[in-house]
Image (cartoon, rainbow, N blue to C red; front, side):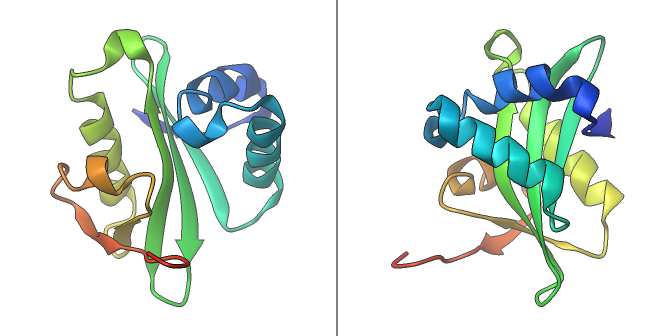
Length: 125
């Protein structure tokens, strides 16, 4: 089940987020968490089965009616079991009127999910 992030889940969320290649550095990780906690357009979701085992970070794009999946992470002991795909499908079910958009970090995975509506090009992509 996809649940919205709460401050009480901060350590779990940081642990899951640290599995993302660009979030290995502690200062970068703390900055990313702060953005999810303070920026209105940034939303963090956690995937809960018996425990919290996954994380999905989204940036809302009002101009394109899109949800850019910025971060997607699953606890390594739960990988290759469809958890990531279930998280993305659940997000699409929560926001059926929104387009799911990938970025350079999530494009490869989201291409396998059959719900992504495109790749958001940034910079020199």
